[in-house]
Image (cartoon, rainbow, N blue to C red; front, top):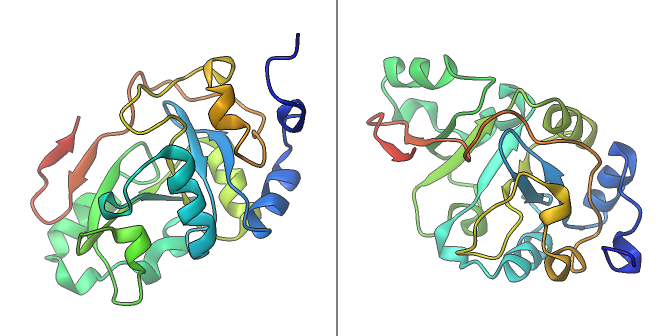
Length: 194
């Protein structure tokens, strides 16, 4: 018996995943700790589809993940932070650290949610780096589970009902983190998720 519905039986290569993303698709992919769902963050239709799949409220905001600082620098209002706070953020990247940073005015509400900040991470995970580099920019990164349910480190444990609503699953493995990346407020250094 096949574990995934027909459209999920073939796992995606980087090229296939990126093609799906450029078509407005939503994909599942491995991150530093758990499986994530991602899409083009600047495609409102794709982001809202991802939110529907996950059953997540838009007001909560989303994390963006990138291969390098250049991919997200235009989204950060660095002048709104003291230089030492920005240095603290940059000292953790690339790596498994998500920061809430003041964002520039053009950042859409469907990414920020009800916040004046945007959650950002520059990853060192090989699959994420390859995906973002090949895509040519940052991606939405939220755990591949229904809102309120536990995320998973194992692709075979992903919900078939959730997966059948996506455009594919990128081949790969999660990293060595036992829990999702910590989230800190860049202005204060306060840990919001440990």
